[in-house]
Picture 1 (cartoon, rainbow, N blue to C red):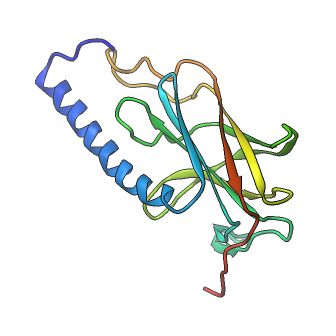
Picture 2: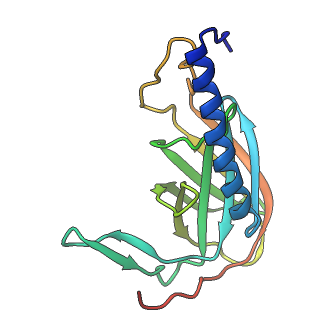
Length: 181
């Protein structure tokens, strides 16, 4: 990476690193609960994590928020976390796709993973289905981001599509209990 010379640029780097450290602390708590794997590729740290399917708020038909329970077939919540490899900050606004393969390399799930606002760990996530308890491998593909990158020195990042494989991970189908609001 190019050299950072000014005090202002050094302070920006320091603050970005602090943001990454704060995100890392929350990330570690979330990852301690569920099967996950992380890999570094190009300018990214990419994590795939899995847990029982769960409910969440989404936009309702009248524009208000509505509680959505997992679909009848859903038995897994697929999560992908994408961070900057250098400073650890979460990367928003990405096109993230996930494919899940069983131990025999048969594709058992394929989906786009949208952004989810989370109370303390932003991530990409959606509910889906695995056929049974067992070992699975995740393939995460991230399209080159369409967002602008600020800064002539530090802005030349995330310059191509990236695809990684993570796992195997032992997964168990399930749905988190949830009740009325």
